[in-house]
Length: 302
Image (cartoon, rainbow, N blue to C red):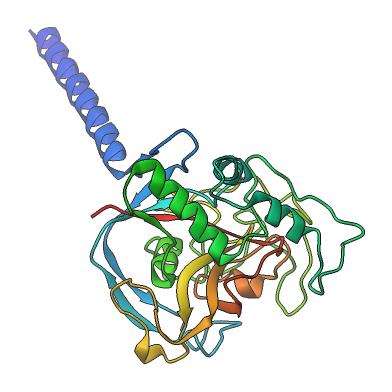
């Protein structure tokens, strides 16, 4: 009788263990980022949930700029974001369909800021590396190509607040992985500021080059290269008055529209600009040829 009771208890424990394992697997599947692709050459998209976060940086944050005032933003809708920046492969597919000006970008990359040929031009990688040298208008052209693919006006650039929300992924630290910069989590340059220049360390083996997208860990939302590799165009015009910034996730349509913003950081940029709160509004929307500037896309899904 004792052996029978022991056998029953062991069977019950096994059933509970299996049930617990199934529940754990189901929970993990529920927590996993939801992804989709709309076409073969379309970017892999990650669904970002609604939420509220504090945008900007506290006054105590090292390297903080004065236009990073803290304010609460509530994004009351789900939206999708490309897992990584748009790649050369994806850009060239758009160029083959004559909706992206591939030749103009090739020419712009080979000129310096004074319009003179770069004698020692170096290509920073193609294929799965992020496309660079594109203007804000070029990014809009790519968005139009995606929308034509699906027959709907759903793709777009991220707004500035959407980008920071997606980069933070629920964190309040300087970077999504913590308060200290780390070459284990991003492809960026020198430590501190103001000097720029490539640097390697940890997982970062690309000293003066972009890295293939998603060469580093993803954040809690399932996104990669939200810090480092390349700067990425966003939709917004520049607004310095924090009180006038949107609190609902929308883009700034007023302010200084002679420049458009970009976020993230790049392979040659220092850790000062690697921070989640860092803002960059220095280029006109028709600026081409910057070998550290590309973009990623968002998609409206509500």
